[in-house]
Length: 175
Length: 175
DNA sequence: CGCTTTGGTCAGCATCATTGACACATCTGG
DNA sequence: CCAGATGTGTCAATGATGCTGACCAAAGCG
Image (cartoon, rainbow over all chains, first blue to last red; front, side, top):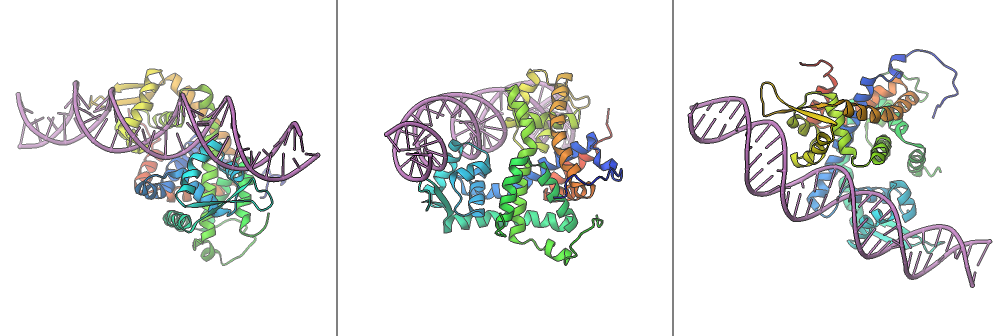
């Protein structure tokens, strides 16, 4: 990321960079409506199925994202307590969406993987959200997408940023 | 929008517009981490004060955004039920954060306004989020902000889009 | 061998949402 | 003017998601 060290106090775009009140009000509105509708599709599927909610989806997502993830890593990513995760993870295991296998080197760990059933549900939720995001991306155009990514990443705190970068780089085998 | 010093003259549109799996996974991660950290600051203030949560903040925000809004309009914006709103709004009125006054033309309506106390709390939460958003905007730059806005708006469904556009254009007041 | 780490579990509580049913005041149209 | 529609408030019950504190068991490690 091209941070800081560029001594360019160029006042170009100053109006945009000086965050006036109305600009932040707009950002608040955008994030509220946008995030709500982004999650709405998957939420509706889950509500239809019953017994599961958004928290279960998040677990399915991140386990699918990092197969073999440990409980501790998942806790760090989600930023919730062990007890809260337990109430979501245990049913997912009991109902055959996720498997737990002891770690090879550290047998205290429970490595989490999606079962076929779990992967199927995750994919269904994924496809539903893909429609929403694809439409937004297509309407906005590639340059806007790049800007969207920059701003969303900028909203994260240092910890979330580190978590995100690990996930984003995981595909390319680049830690 | 088509500014931006791209050092990589890839076949730009096509790769970005065809929403590959990994691109959506990234979008999911971005929205999860970004939205969570965006709300985290205000949530922390509210948790400190006790007695109020994110739902109360949303009410304060939208009442401040549209002074004199009716309960029905607020329900439409928030997309929750009357009962859910009641449990949040009633305490805000009882504790002197919001006033209800009968509508001039339709006395069934309860027009909502922030009190001085309510405006002060809303401003405190606002300033906290301003820091987060300002940092993200500054790091990303004006072009990225424009893209962010386009994509977030694109994520909304038709109803949310109409609500958002009304709020965005609602600088003009009606007495 | 103790100490730490990793994970699981119990009991209790708070917040934010839901549905269904009902009550009341007020506006509006025939 | 009355009947019905509308705007708002409130009852009870339920569910999903989070929290804290406490405690336990298995496994790794110095």
